[in-house]
Image 1 (cartoon, each protein chain N blue to C red):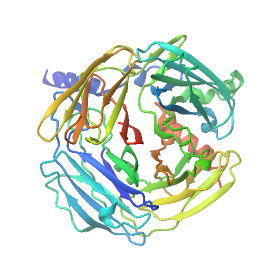
Image 2 (tube, one colour):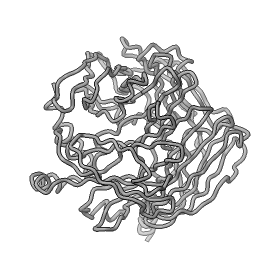
Image 3 (spheres, rainbow over the protein chains, first blue to last red):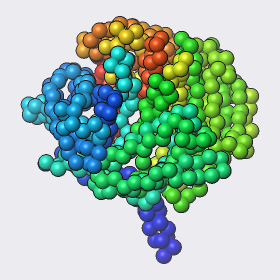
Image 4 (cartoon, one colour):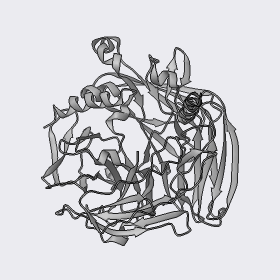
Length: 267
Length: 269
């Protein structure tokens, strides 16, 4: 009996620590490639995305590929689809408001499709291999400068017929603490996207050596985006920031500012 | 799973620093929120096989430790490996095998045990959350990366890009044979540039003017983590690492990476 209880406890801990659908991770077979959930912002920024032509990279030769981008507004509603064909190893997409339906802040996913003759020729490969799109997103504020990039983070979003679904799962509450500090002389935007198929709630708190203070709480729908802004000078002492969500891996995109300089990275 | 962190000197007045906190990186809400550990800092000269301790530091009541490459007088390309260890562990002055880093996990929550790896040049700054996995440091391996982070279309703005390949080998070395980091045209597979390096170093390669050629970067001698640093003299700096090829795949990551590397490395000179 004790062994059974111990096994059940261990399984519960395993389940709660697993950010993905266990069924799909262990047994299921998807017919779609999977994508991280990326963020775009056009509110005084330009956003560029570098997409990978996965089959071309796998086979080390240029191959025709249709890149498909689905855009979501800040509430998680679909607001645009953009398709483009390229045979290069990488395709660079300058995201604009035509693609996003006029939306200036939101999320997007990237998938690829190959011509039937190519998938038929390499059908044995597709039995074993499923592509994952992590890509690189770049931002800049000045069109005469270069983009600052960071790589894809987490999402595992796939297309099932006409529906957009996710392998990411919400579990028990977790607290995530990145390794950077919030400094009084800097400003910050933290962009949080919800990769799971249901609403999640987030509680942000600042921690100094001897205290902890909640600075924001929100609930965001599936595929939606929330931006927490911490203005320069609003934090009086250097602090760590943490957030509590029901995601076993709850990362976000961080913009850090000082004067005309900025940095962007994933947490 | 546990991870090393690192500092290096990449030259051109770019300063590298790292920040670590004793707050647990990822945990269940009900688990302990802090973990006590200290940091040992070790370096190995390019012509040496010994790791020499150059620092040992604790949190001393603070939540964060920040270390800077400026504190350690590193040569260009010299690595300082930062190792989280138990506060009770007595660190020796030198090792031929690097101590294993402790895990900063307190429960089963998934986590990469990272630091903020920060670079600055004058007032410009850029960082990423990074680590060098202990398991990687025990393998010799090979390296392959592509060019999405190379600032190819910004030459008119005076933007330069360096590839910095971080290579940490924690097991004992009997010698340091020459290794070679290469750049090739990804389409024609023709070799463009070669640079010699040794294990336990940061290989710094300037990426020259290439117009619209797609590039690949590789070594058949060791693995490594590639950092791409783009910068200019007027206040732009960007750092990021590319994904390892295993990240192009879901589920069968190792098989996918093996097929991809085989496909490229057998064609590249």
